[in-house]
Length: 197
Image (tube, rainbow, N blue to C red; front, side, top):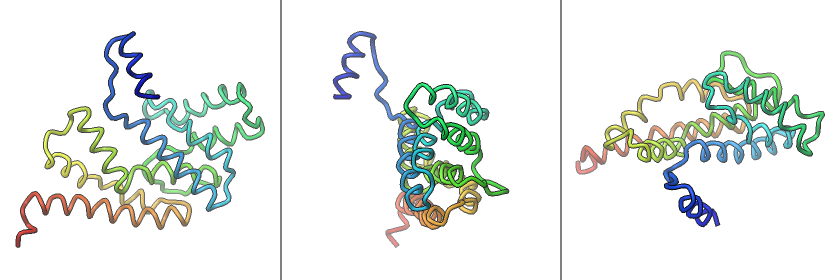
């Protein structure tokens, strides 16, 4: 059905870019992780799910996107059947999701869950394939060595792993980080022919 809609748009409006959509892939991964973490930590599922869907809604404005996203949530959610008493909690979780690591932990459980879900989606094999697909779709990377170099220079990820708030996210982050590093190491080993000796 989606393919038919894309074809219709292409027929009516010219070419539609069907390349990999990193932003959509990231948001849907965050939603999945946030729902699971909410269930595991007993966070408010409605708050967490709404915040996960909207956390990057204003990503186009750059570093101020959490504040702008929170503003959007405060304006948009009252127009829906979302519980009015929970709107401010959604906005707060969105406001607090900025940064790749934290010096001080967040206090509100729903903010912790959103932050953890957002960062878990940026480490591990999910991240490796999201970034690889996005890089290839945008032709930013020309060789596998380019991809390896980008993957191996993500030194912020260790700080992100150390910044996880919830126990399930801490465990998953360690496993994901190890898998991420293993992937680039093995790819480089194969490309160098090191597996021959």
